[in-house]
Image 1: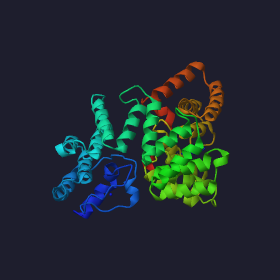
Image 2: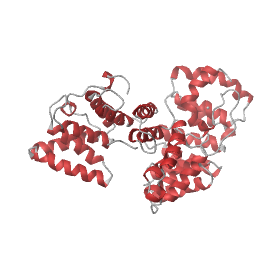
Image 3: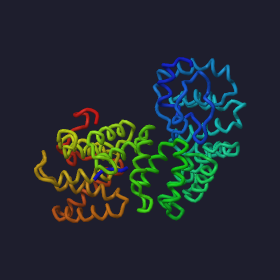
Image 4: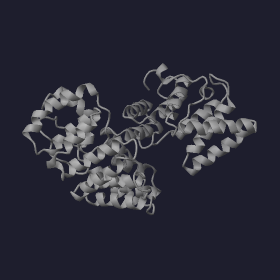
Length: 420
């Protein structure tokens, strides 16, 4: 029951780059390094999926000032200006960032147009700026930006401006993929894997994942490993799965770390090693895969590689369920509240709450069926009015409401035990 789921002042630039350059880099094809102002990075940093992370406001001035001379020496280096604009954006200076990329000489530059559209996409808190985002993305596409093709695909897929149109999104992703864009390859592969708009075809999905993986896309490596691990029987190859999970994990992908840990935990294709499983679960959690804490909870619950600690396990299960989407963690909480002999007495309403929340979020038919069977048993232990009240509270919590204290009775905060 586990979730499977880039020199001015080197010290300053290194701190900045660790959190921003994935956003400034061109996603689809490598670009020349912007100047000696920036520390060279391994190829993997040029191919990360863009994520604009929060930048410490107190440091952005030093970075911008130290790189200003390089910008003046290289006025035509769009990549450098985009990198500085990204620092400004991440520091909350969004107007300054946009102004830097709105210079007359950049009006038709595909990278500048794309990043302006991307800034709007990443910061919108209403729909007033989204039509402008689409117009910029369309201009970037006309200027040759494959990244903007993918961004337009997002707009269709996520119902940003128009009504959702999976067919248009898939066509855009496929266009970017065929032009050599790793991000487009991954998205096209996912459409084939899940049968979204097109007939489900795991083999085609794998083909696109492998092409993107060859371009050093760490997430594509993870997805290729998953197909070899959990795909149709004719595609399964445990050795290849482990190979791609390892490569993905070595490039910092949290999903790859999580599944590599799972392989060690179960001894699938490798010798079972709880120590290595714990190592990769913790690395995955540190890489931002919050659901990895559920897997750590299982280790503490059973005493695998660690001293058995049910209270710590329960705290971790609750931490994993906090996003209101981790079905496995919710189900595990329900099971804990259903057991006798824990550090709390069995609690039928709490068990029902967590199983019902899991049922409402579950998408896999087999999981829903098992949960429904458990819910029927739970409902026999509760008066109908109380069961209805529990269901209402579960739905309210799933929709963003507060978690009633009685459904976490006896569970301490994760902070009581330190980082997972």
